[in-house]
Image (tube, helix red, strand yellow):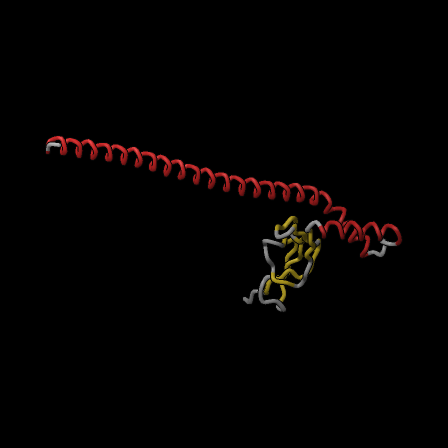
Length: 167
């Protein structure tokens, strides 16, 4: 073989190798692109599932809150009946059962006094002044408040005692 033929063969071989490498690089690039697309779609789907689960949970909580809010006057009536000694016999058993069911669902009553006034959980109905307090204080609970899990459904209605202002 002559040197010209050898050089031409090497040139053909080199061109063939370069062509195969270019094709392989194109295939690898396509696989990398498809892999990135797949990873992006998987991440989008995971985020979608989390958002749907979160929305489903909040929708369920809103439905519970709507139903429980309608029951609050009944719970208030049961509390007043208990305070006046009118809960006896079978009616007391029904009242206890209703209270246990709403507590099991996540409703809790709060009615502590005296505590510092907190506008996030208290609704002030009356104001008084006194030298016995150093900060606005919910001194008397007029109507208990209710929370569903950590969300205030109804603030406690309270009488607030403010510190006396010295002139």
